[in-house]
Amino acid sequence: GVNVLSDKAFENICDAWLRKFSRSATPEWYHTVEPRAKIWREYFEGVPIDKINPIDIEEAINEFAECNPYYNKPTSRKTLKEYLNVIKYNYAIYCKACGK
Image 1 (tube, rainbow, N blue to C red):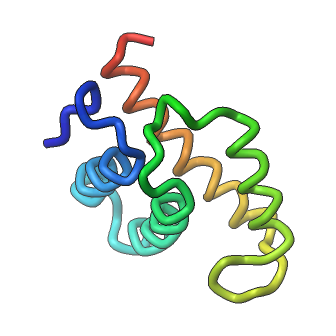
Image 2: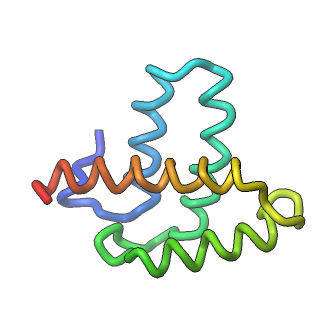
């Protein structure tokens, strides 16, 4: 797996989380969550996770609310909550590994 202490690039942590998540999630739930993770992965590609702050996440959510990255229409509240859950899980993995 990815050592989040040495490789903090968000996309690597996100990929590691998705691999782990895929082993425990139902196929239906995985197929809902995977595109949400992909959007975050692309949004924060190359950014170390410890450099992403709550304002960055809020700005992204506001952008997603105005224009869904897949459909170019406003994003539903339910989908925005799914986006937030995905980013929270990735932060939890990082913080647990770092002892934060």
